[in-house]
Image (cartoon, rainbow, N blue to C red):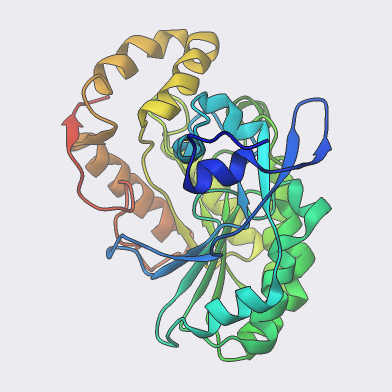
Length: 326
């Protein structure tokens, strides 16, 4: 039953029906007011975004997107990973929206939630959207960002989209090759080796694959050795690009990240609290150090193009706190 004081997306969420329940996660359907939304950030290489799901069950401790559940009046940041909304599918409505996107403008899938999270195996929204792209769409660029090896399921479909005069890039995030660390940071995401397998399968299908070693977290995975290991494995698997950015902690992320630090990295807690006491973003010499470190790694393994915004949040300049970790 809906709550009368709720409006907009919060009202739709309250009216959503339960599709399936697991021991940890509840899936709900969600009426889609629109599938494709305008990207407000002119610094990014795409102008439109698609998120087939709201919420993400991977439970990444640093996740910046937890705040999106607040629009549905779900204030506990942990609910973001346990209540997953699958948007009700309407192929005609999606096609009509897609036709209104100008040819010269790019589209990114998975900017707030992973489009290949476990919900995709049940509901297939990402694949349904890609099937429409394969038949009807021609755009300057299509970017997909994921932590899931399930992306390789759609290798042939993505190749078909690329053949239709679309520039297609799949960006697979691999934060670390240390399986134990990855499990602590991203407890319900596929292992790093599984993601590398997806990189290889997609690359063999002719898809442009970028490995995103992000976020770089001070005192956790920011050593050159750690970043280099990811870059080498990415190159060996056939990735064509490699980039990274430094962690930023919005309040919704801090509520999950700091308890994680206290449990797994207690010696780092004091420095993180000092660094993020007044702002969500870092700036200053640490960002420059990481940018130079990543560039050395990229050059070492033949990733010659440098992504814009290296070492900082891709949104560009933000009110950030100067802090040295060296």
